[in-house]
Length: 435
Image (cartoon, rainbow, N blue to C red):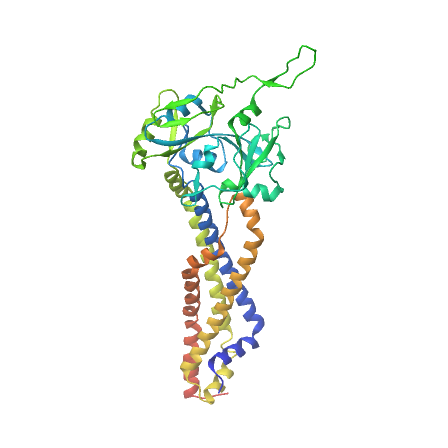
């Protein structure tokens, strides 16, 4: 007599069209459930990695989530900005190990442009403390120098020495193209899997010059000279503190935010309170970790709805399998009777139905993972460029193993309904045999 496995495979092959549709339904269910889980986890990891090395973000008083999204992810605005004197005050605090100024408001072909200092590349950390590294070039040393993220370099084919032109405005909205003040790519950063890959970094001086009102001057021979900027460039002023030794070649009137690293993280709450009570202007000192928790609480309801919808689709796929098996029972009654006549026990026929369900569910799982892997491979550049999401399929698969096992167990458990009917049917037919 044939083995139970060969009987199950042969039976499914005889009903291959319906079985294939059931496998496809389960595959789409797995595709949706695992896909939602990967996107959810990848989004949280990407957000957390982007702000993992910052202890505080100082900006104009506002909602912590708004400040975090604007300063770290380049989404939204931080308001009117803060004075340079505020930066000097924050930098001079005894508990502050480092402070990096951030200026925003421009874009390069839809990607955020950040004005900062070379200290950004020394102190910024991502992905659990990993420093930024250059694939080629170095940090900018001239006012017209620029450092670009890995995604921008790949998408537009930029190399060291390439000339780029920025525009005023956020996102893809450009109000004024600054073609009179191009920048030269001095460095290209290694891929980080965070929003850094999607940013252009320029010097504060270069960033400030883009927005300065230009005037024309005439030389003694009556010829127009190149435009000069009304903002004075005080290259001799420096911030002097007992534990800081940073010279700023350019000090803008306004910046948007300050990234702060603390020498003692235990003092973060006292520093936060001191900055919030700063009398010169209203400030917010945002803890990135707390802002992320608040962000997840805001998006938590929508996240749960999406997870529930995906789970409902998975349940629908399993129900479709149960319907397929149940609908075929009466048609297969003769088949079961023949199996009984050649010595098959009711338990073996029960096992046959469960095995068929296991094969269908396993095929659906594998097909769903293959479809998801293929689509992830196709959409990963879009997810990275548009949303800064990098989906690590290998790492995700380890986390999802329990979810896959749960779907398999659910499929086997659901098959008990038609299997029990078969068991009773064949037992009754064994007592009153009929063909």
